[in-house]
Image (tube, rainbow, N blue to C red):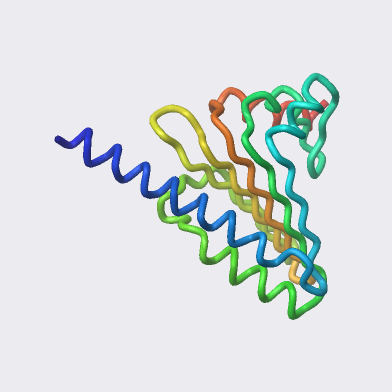
Length: 154
């Protein structure tokens, strides 16, 4: 019974993140906001090449990803709107991987898991003057994320 309840909870949490990712599309085209969506089909086309997103090498993950969204804001009103959208993400259902606070900037990484598999990786970067949200959706492992982060050290 506990397992069924836990599974239902994970499905609801995942559906909430998916709905929130669709809400990001609303920001596309707004003044001061840049929006990029990369579909599974496009990710398949770049499979095997040196795919990089915000300096992270995701080429080893492309076959495991369903979608990638990047939303950036650099005007004060747009930064406020994007921050509000990021605050609406169900982070209570997500695990904090890392937080870095340094000289007025803040970077946070969150994951949403179903069992041992990661379905969503959320990165938030707030410099005060600009704000970036990166959402990677798919079906990957903690080891896959390790390989991405190790590639940034090379």
